[in-house]
Image (cartoon, rainbow, N blue to C red; front, side, top):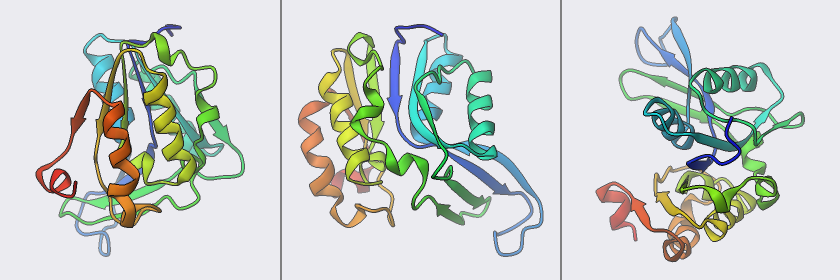
Length: 196
């Protein structure tokens, strides 16, 4: 992979188990995939011919193995993903009728910290990308997003992507708004933007 990716994204990706035959409480058939705004953006960029690197933490578990293999297959640079033997990869269960459950408390990504960016060539990327989800995972993940935006010399992109039930959900505005001054592009849905 390139030592100087076009885009560097920081955030959590979870194993996603999708119920295929009904709501979660009744389903008997599931499809395994993965989900995370930042890694999804990297996949889209790689498919369009850009070099994209995803920075995160995954558990040293089969779920993390599966996510890494899938992202490598898509052409995403995962050189700066740390495997954490003491914390699991997050899990998302969802169905086709709108039901969703997250199991991410204590996940490997909830331990992201500014130090995870130490060897990442942030200053050389044409753009960096993060989301409010990462900020709301914990104090240190939020600090890591701040460090990513601070070090970036290219375009700095933040997707609000607010999620209820995370460590900082009840303080989302307080935690995320200071990052507005550090970004060039801000994405959000109407309800998310109204919160600010």
